[in-house]
Image (cartoon, rainbow, N blue to C red; front, side, top):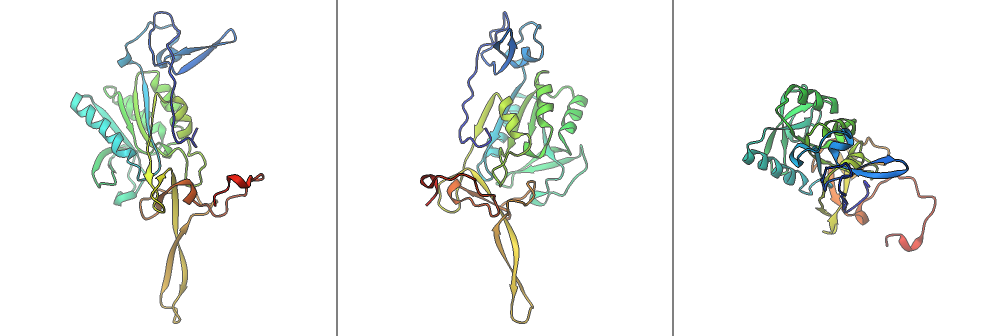
Length: 277
């Protein structure tokens, strides 16, 4: 699922008696038959029906960097402000982009959009910190998570809290610069009620960009006197670390035909007619 360019989520009607929710995207196995369930009855099978507002939801804003997913995510926060609903924004405390240094857990930092607008956020070091904070602030049910790929274990936390009626809105990269799954984001896609896919513009050809091209600086030879070292940006290697927060200095948006990954193992089987020319 992490390789998908578009995701259409089909919903069913909850099979629990008296529940008419049309947002059933869970299932249970009974007597060899899979039955659809809404989020609430997946966790509390024998409970009475509840209103749509009381059931938990997960909405994802996914895509490569520079695709506008954080801007769309922020618009949901503005809606909460207009409704007067309390909400919280969480950010990984080791994300030091845009001059934000690493901060202590549960202190205030900022999520910085590419427009340079700063959004106040609570810093946490892992997914468990999100649950800890929410347990201490029971009045908050609207939860915004920035860059969900930085939170291993996010799937388990979301699965548990969705059953308690929390509403999650998360941005994330479904795959890393190496096109491999990025921590829990693919699993969150399987749990989501709504997935918004966003695209950037390829820096090479202008086509819709779905990939993150990580670039790194390498030292070249200096001048004849050895007084100057010239650096050049080259694509990151297959074996480089997956997690490396950065912005325009480290990443480019590219379409698949212009995305490259030096050092990637060759596929065992190839079909010439499917190779890029």
